[in-house]
Picture (cartoon, rainbow, N blue to C red):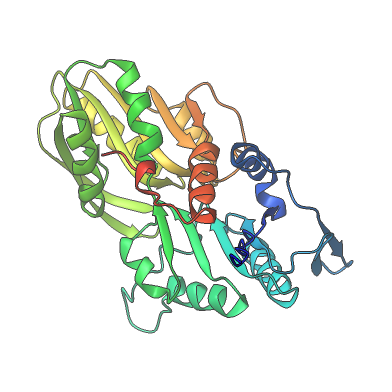
Length: 318
């Protein structure tokens, strides 16, 4: 008599969201093909909060979606939800962080300062994360701060097709600083364009004292590429410098639109034709110069591949 074959039941997948990323998480869940999981937050008058899963996650693969841009409440939400999933006996717990906050503190650039990104990595693992999915880290080496698997996605998968659709003649890719030169060369490879680099000196954080351009932009349509735009000081100064040097037009693509302070006003009054960002951070204000491309399909596809134990290679531009 032939023995019965025992079919191994696939772990159920569930997607939950921190409050700051609810809109993006809903779109990710739609692309994944499952409904959003139910989670409730209890809040105290002093600002303390407590998340609660309103359905069982025992034995499930749990994806928790939440960008960790300041305030620190966003990071705290992610940590508490990871801990709740761990204590509720979830089998796999993936922290889906479209924007990995505090990533600019990736090294000791002067004495007596923390390496904040390393500390955040340890906090996430201690809280219960068994895997991390994120996009365009400020520094690639942050992946090495984790002892758990990290799936590092690139917004070029979203931006390159859009830039190709513009059909710009004499296209040149630019990096707003020396640190972004590797990213600029990657874009230039896909688009078959030249590369120029800005060299800047900072007086202090978010304050540029001097900027120079390495390369020729005369008669070119320039696209600046960066991982994030915060105060927009660097981008707008770089755009102004390139127009002065004879560029026909200047656009910028930045994965994470932090846009703090008077960044929107700077962009509006700048020489930039357009600033293209993704929705890793919920857009604060609408602007005719700012175009938002969704990263939901990329994250949904990656999460589904992870759940099915398939390669995510197809989610990268070859």
